[in-house]
Length: 294
Image (cartoon, rainbow, N blue to C red):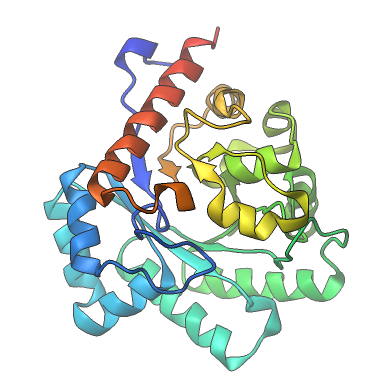
């Protein structure tokens, strides 16, 4: 690494759910209005921001993507993420419209990828991607290529792509530069993924995004609910994530670090205070992980 631990200044991104307020993926609408939430992001000086599909729709209807992009640059926000496309394998009109909106947002906001989910279940899924799923993904990646963006598939503990080995299998099946993955420490920890899998199963060029969150011990029978409600700031939790961060640094990751924290225990905090604590915790974990490298 070119920086010593004492001089590291991580590029941190407030992922969509982190600044959504007292809500999570099991709720579709953030309870705090967009202007106040965005103000909290600006006040805590994040360099990047993630946009949920509900925020994307609001921006398109009330402001326009170009204008929002200009506002972000004015406030020092240099990186924008767009998420989350799910249900894309159903190939129906509703999800194709969502896809079109997210692709448009990515294009106009200079976001290089759109985050997508695998097929989500309530608990750990036994089935892995079948041919129909892979065919649908190949078509999605083809449309992304036509739009000059990448698809960032996020392995999720409660999905048919739960870990890095299953993600490796999908990447090998499609072999497209326009398909990459999201590394989310919560899902890795919930699945018991060995940190060295990052070094052995993933090429640096295949990582589109990284998401950090502390892991509170999940209920294996309720992984979806646990993912939405049992996260904490990155430097706390029942499963340390520092080794995952160290592996990413050793692999050569120098991109933005997303911070994705969703938890009922944080719901009553001031959003500004919560965002500040998330940012400080993430920076601490990254700095500590870097100090362990040779």
